[in-house]
Image 1 (cartoon, rainbow, N blue to C red):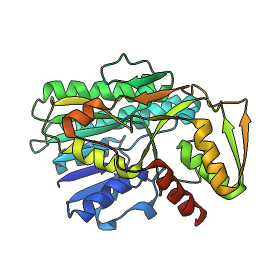
Image 2 (image 1 turned 90 degrees about the vertical axis):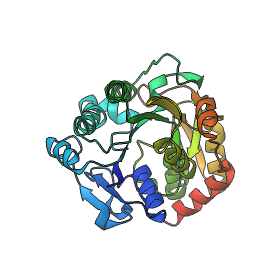
Image 3 (image 1 turned 45 degrees about the vertical axis):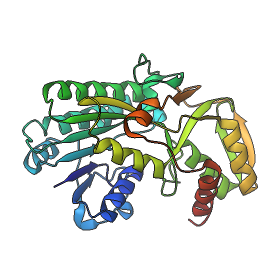
Length: 307
């Protein structure tokens, strides 16, 4: 097996599987379908239902010996991590432990890439990968623990490239419009096309970096197959440009003829601002984003309206 994708029925995982399918790469996608959907699976013959926090998955991985592991499964909502931090730990830390423990005897292994998060930074603009980690949510803390586990693995297995990929706010066609606890842009669009009213929890002055799924897949492909840098690297994956939430909401509202209301209530442990410095990925792998925000946002609204 060339590639293993955990969380392969989720938003990002299914899009990466689609990329591999188009490029005729051999892979297996696994998912427990607690959040991912079977309808997202591109090649059903390349999919297995698996709980990646289980001992059975660890043993299966030990037997399969993939060349590249793209570890995308996990819990990705800050609000859910606040409501159930134990479940967040299981899905973000224990699954990573299983991936690493199942890989210690894999002599074919070339890389492990972990989907981490901007949440590890807390409130930080132009965050560099070398900046001090200051998470303010259980989600951010658990993602950072997963990063530490991966770095420890890399220190022991020097022949394996290990990548902690700190994703910023990913959006695009295919996000779960029924999930109003994860994915800021998809939440706003879902409210707009379904109810013609966007309820914003928290101030419009918050700052975020939004990156389209197409650019995320391009970045993942470069990182997974990189031949530059140290065997352990952390990478920001965003655009490097931040926007006010108010600006984004106003654009969505104008394109959907929707009303806007700002609520005093806000998501627990929500970041006020966060954006990445993208110089590391740009310099090491000549990465730059190609998607233009206004255009792909319009396409996503049209897609959502058709659902």
